Length: 327
Image (cartoon, rainbow, N blue to C red; front, side, top):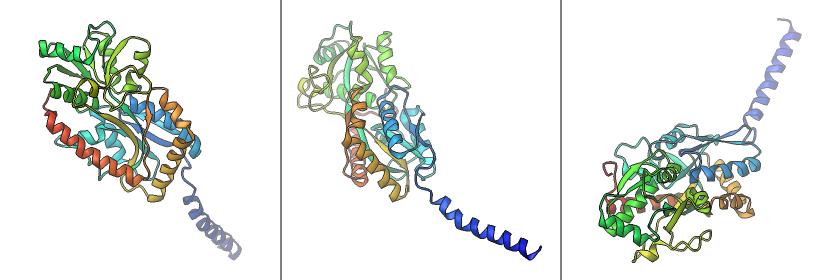
């Protein structure tokens, strides 16, 4: 090789080696971000994910692509999130079932604390006890009395064993001594369609799932599971009012990543979400389906809340006797 040619090649190689680190250090994100939702389209976590994807994508300068992966009460989608690279390009919206499943299944494919990075709480809201609009039950007490008169005569639907809709009804039955037959479906939206087709007589989905059907008069709400009445439906009483000494189940969803997401990315995502919550852009979209913002002061605080919820739901599941072998 001639000396001039050799120098040209060497110079090109040196320049390439200098540029390589610059390319590797391109600011995050420099390509679309995958957002896994372990639930059906139309579910409360899906509504949250789509609201977040729209606003957070604009904030970060790259689209967030929602990918629904329903099944097994959220385990399939959460498992895919666990297996993804911890580089910030695969995130997930997980909900209460994330901490419920570990108590419901003996052989979980992941640990809800060890295998994920908790980033930020996003939204939540109560569950709502609902019946078809033509049902004879006007109050929660009416429905409970009917179940006691004819134990096992009424069916209720849920988004699957271990879903919050399943656990909420089982807790209600346990507290009142009533009996009903559980019919699990693939996802929360089917709770409503099953009632409207006559397969079931009542259900307890998250309020966001039921909002459209309440506003169109297709179903009737008997009570909400929160400690206070919903701002969206203030005429609906709480179950705590109907069932002393109280009955409260509050739902939440949040943004998660695979374990060991770098701290700088965790902080970047948390701050971006928090800014959207502060400026109201995310709030308006979540309110459209009767959702409520959930705030956390830091990723560490959200992680502590998830840990506390894991303990709380474990206690509740033991109390009501709900498990994978239960109906």
